Image 1: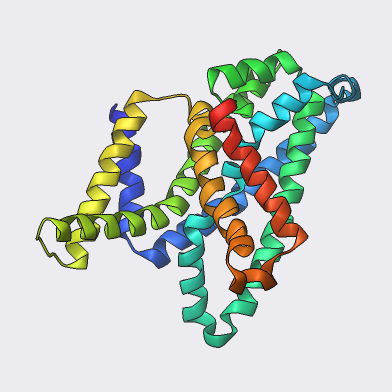
Image 2: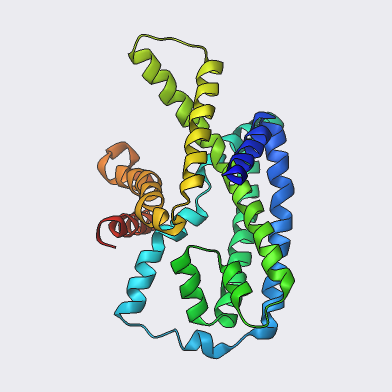
Length: 282
């Protein structure tokens, strides 16, 4: 409980230092993470066993079911929408009218780095870790780094660095998500107070929203639910509804948005529907 309170307090203190300071902290954290995962992927190449991958490539109902129920996790893992508005504002302040082109260039490079590094790490893990260890890690709700540390003859530095990396990664994700969450929570607080006849300043609404979100975060940390189960049941499907289904479906329902229909939009809609279906049938 004390650890949870300390982590939430430290992350809130970083957030309260301001947008620019928080972005600098996130920028400082992201490159060591990428370097660590690339190093670990290269380190695992010495333990690659192609039979582990070929033995799991059977295309049957069980495999299709596993791919289906993994969609919410992939949607959640690659979602970075909460930080987009903050990113856009920061680029606008720095580049003015050229901000849009700058954002596109940055995001293209970022997506390429993320996809290549993630795929390399995933395949290195699949080629190095027996399926039983991966299954145990999934059932226990721990990271793949924990599965690596549980393997026989695993080096001691792997378990220690795994804990550090997990904390750093979750902290970075927390800060990135927190911007969007606080923006939404501030508006909800303002609307709720207005409905009961109370009108407060934006600073008050923001402070109250930070207190409420921090309290809820602390309580959830103390409860310590299975994160994967929450992503399956809530987070992934909700993200798919808001970002995958609603925007793409509107292009088919609203005539003015007809020019935005495309094969890519249709694929996005299908993935969103598959993701939401896991919440009801998975």
